[in-house]
Image (cartoon, rainbow, N blue to C red):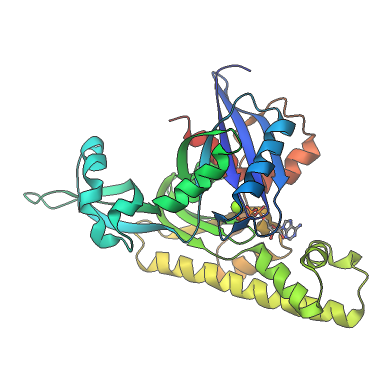
Length: 352
Ligand SMILES: Nc1ncnc2c1ncn2[C@@H]1O[C@H](COP(=O)(O)OP(=O)(O)OP(=O)(O)O)[C@@H](O)[C@H]1O
Ligand SMILES: [Mg+2]
């Protein structure tokens, strides 16, 4: 393998997955990708609950995938991370980092000493003769939550070199997908229980929202309606024609699926409406790009299109990445494409 390499690690509700990228003169190459399923309940709403189960899955992931090292960039996205648009006095980056904790307590729902902070500037502004200000996105994560996710990774013998917001990972891997530079685009990564929304323009994040919703809500609704296990409902959701259930059950399952998909789409739309109500000049949303396993739900893109009146497409996070000797066939790569957006984006973040 030529050049430097980085591994992005995504701990999702349905499984752990990691991607190794190398950065060479020819550009970025996907060297390895692997995933291992997690037992139900090991990760809840984006937080590691069962450290033993997660670290066991991570050990298996490393044993089976052939990564070249054990240093990872870890993603987090859950209710204990908040992202807010804030305005602060404009400062050089170094000074800003040093003084952030003193400046942001008023914006935070938690004591500042219990938070891990980050700030992403969006724009500077100010009238002549006035102190300049800057608008940006403040990220604050509850330290204890971050440490507990990191702990699960360390227990697997891995080293976390940095922690990044999952939404920003999606932005890195899909931020240039099919984009005209001046358009604001919403990236929506739909997981099992967590959906990351990030609106950006030319790669600069303008708005982030983490929703605790995803494909599992649809599965659960089908399971509840038909009195099935989650596994049976999952199979039915993914391939409705092959389920062997009777006509009436088909109809009931269809209704449950419709209703949950509709409320999911509603939530996404209202987040985008919220963004639109305070969008910066020139920040009118032009398109929506989907990723994540949940984006495979039949008809989801069409539903979102109807609700938002915007073109909706499924993004390819590997469009500007060469494929190395991953050991995966072209079909397998195509199949995992929606799932690599997060780990690939995390690894891309290491190349800063
Ligand atoms: N063919 C398919 N049709 C419909 N849904 C699908 C399909 N394949 C996967 N999914 C759904 O994708 C979801 C899993 O997506 P993903 O793997 O991105 O989530 P995750 O990262 O593990 O979880 P999270 O990010 O929510 O913690 C599940 O709800 C699953 O039902
Ligand atoms: Mg996910």
